[in-house]
Amino acid sequence: VRRAAMLDTENNVPPPLQIMGNHSQSFDVISSILKLSEYKCYNAKFPEGYTPPELVIATHYWKAWLVLLILAAFNPSTIGAQAWKNHPTLRGLMEIVITNNYQFPLESMNYQEALLQEKQLTAAEKSDILVFEGYRLRLCVDTTA
Image (cartoon, rainbow, N blue to C red; front, side, top):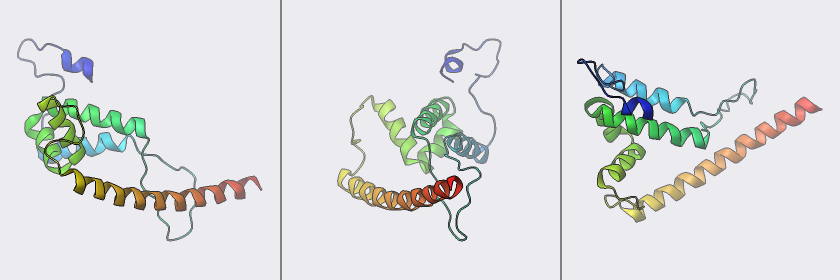
């Protein structure tokens, strides 16, 4: 993606990273790229009624955000607008790049509120992950026994 971003355009050819289409298609691009970082549990059988939490592979997750940041820069009216409105993580990355201020917390955010929200989300995620790991452990034990 970075190499494509650096290509020169000649002969009235659109830039290689310009995505043609409307806002709904740009939203599909964002969700599709983020979906690439999902952690999948193939062939895992969980108890009836249990839905495993949506997990991601961290390195893939942050690479997806960086790819989306580059795409948003080349498509400000579609992907950029959708990202700014619907994805706070990408909005924060865009703000960092625009202001050239790589310090956290961002100047535009209420740090105490964000910290409290992050603590609440982290506690809920840890609880969900512990339940999930318990089921996965039981599945591993059952298949080896």
